[in-house]
Image (cartoon, rainbow, N blue to C red):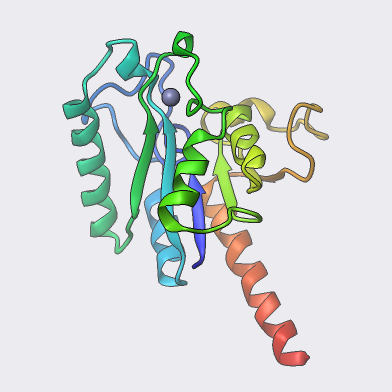
Length: 193
Ligand SMILES: [Zn+2]
C-alpha cells in the first residue's frame, strides 16, 4: 500500500494563528486539493494526522470539526481527490497525551489501523512538530514552506532540531511533484535492471 501522511493546517488549508474553528474558516491552500488528487490518481492513499487542541481548549466542538472535514471531503471530491481518514488529537497541550504532535501517537494509530510498518512512509507538514512526530514513527519527513513553514524560507541548513534528511518543498504541490518524479525514476531503473 502506498501511503502518504499529511498535516492539515498550513499544509492543506490556510493556517490561522487564532485556530481554524469552523467550516467557514476552513479554506484550502492554492492547488493543495489538486495535489492530493494527483497523488490518488497515481495510486497513493492519503491520510491526515492533525493536532486539534482547539477541541481541548473549548474553541470549537466535534460537530464543527466534522463540518470542516465534510467541506474538505466535498471540495476534494469535486477535483477528483480523496483523503481516506483523518486522525486527530483532541487534547490541549497541558493534558500530556501521547497523540499530540510532536508525540508519535497519531502516526502509531495510523500504522495499526492499516496494519503497516511506517518505515519510509512520506509525511509532509509545515511545522517542526509534524516532522518530529513522523520521524519518531519512522516516516520520511518533508517540510513544506507554507503556513508556519514560511518562517523556514531561505533557512539552509535547517536548525539541528529538524530530523536529519528532512526534505524541503515550497508547498504540497511541489512535494507531490517530488514523490511522483522519484517514483517514475525508480520505475525506469527497474526496467533498466
Ligand atoms: Zn492527544
